[in-house]
Length: 235
Image 1: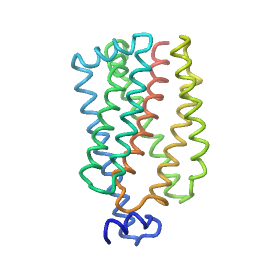
Image 2: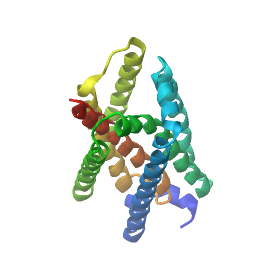
Image 3: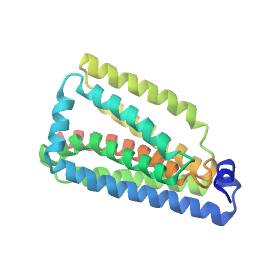
Image 4: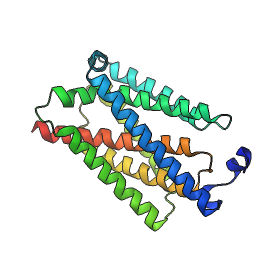
């Protein structure tokens, strides 16, 4: 099948072996992205980079600056990963996204590593994230339900969440545990939506873009699970 035809045919319309190959490639790329993220954040946490980023975030509008950069470069990375002109460009997009996620995570992982007297925080958050992700993935693949209806709900949810985050930074209030739990639910919905799209909507040649979107949702889930675990660890 030529690349152009692959962009016109969805995975759901493809032959079973092609569909299975697409799913294997998507989750293999997701695993590679997660491993690269773990290695990169481990390097940053054990170098001056994390402390430098933490000092920027500690400035009054530093978090907004980093968040704005994340949104700009994240959109750019997603666009590159969705490129139909070159697979190398797709990999550049995925690599860029892993790097910017590592930059965002490095300060909070530094805090969890060096400022909390609890070595179980990060492993616990990681195991919980993996368990939630695995359970949601199993739901989608066993039921084969189309969760595309979540798209509009998720869009509204993320807009509201972003508005609350901006207000929290501007007016100096803490969003608290309730917000973190709500974001875990939102991230879980995003995983259901992304996994459903892997089965129903993506084209066979879009495994890099699919893995990026799934990685983004898993990273979001991990961020707020980590926030919750850190909060309970401080008590």
